Length: 257
Image 1 (cartoon, rainbow, N blue to C red):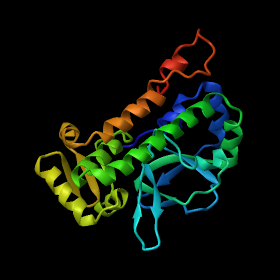
Image 2: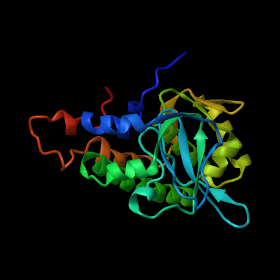
Image 3: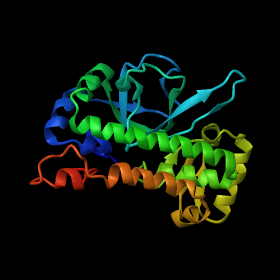
């Protein structure tokens, strides 16, 4: 089935007032983002920033012995390369595609100019950055203190929240790297979830059949992160909005036209 592509499938872009969105639109380039693609190499200069629409990407932290972990995911609620806006350049983490899909990219220096104008774009991105820090921190806590099955449920639910359907393209190996565990541990946890009818897994495709089962199994970390995104973004009324005659700009922060 063909789905019409639009930059406003990304919630940050959809949140912008028409005049702000119109300034960015000519510079947004549609891109396909296949599973496993490297968006940024570690410590490389950020030349483009990505707004995922139907894909999910993740920062990849690696150490000298070859082990690696991904402590956050970024989907249609966010963007990549925030360090380019904050003056830090590259980061120790690379960015890889965790679930295949599409998105839009823009030259980092173009977005930096718009960000430096202040206003709605800067406001939303800074609040998104705070939410992303919370996600990264809470995921680290979860990976240390909760069992693999709970971690897998958290990851699947967070992924669902960033996708339009119930299916995601990713392998057990990709999930194992995300959680920082052995692939066999993910396979065992996934088998348990299949047994209770929560998911179906086949050849790199995971389909969620019963979200309630995942919600019954997941630890509190999922709610902690979700509540913070709600507080900072989805339910937040921007202080920068000065015109009370236009309440829809602030009260419907994530509405998609």
